[in-house]
Image (tube, rainbow, N blue to C red):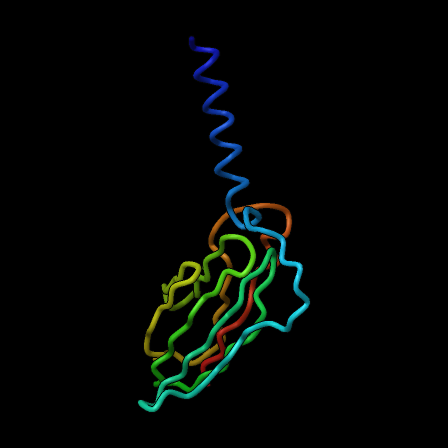
Length: 129
């Protein structure tokens, strides 16, 4: 009985790890990334970031200090998040997060869902001017 429980726990752990970033379907389309940045009528900026195994389609997001920023994360391949260091903001796939860019500088963003080999390459930079 104990051997069976250990085997099941191991299989569940493997399933959870592989269901991270690399768990999505392979995309066969060669269409360009669906990334957009636009100014909202209220003086803010909306950015859509497309996440695929193991990359974000936007390596830099530039905004002005004081802007209201909305980041929408689209998971077109795999399951990803986008976390911004220095702002303590995180958006999960197919959701959005809104915040005020009240600190100038460059802030790293990355996928915060631990997964396979290319996971560390999922980074970008939020530049607040």
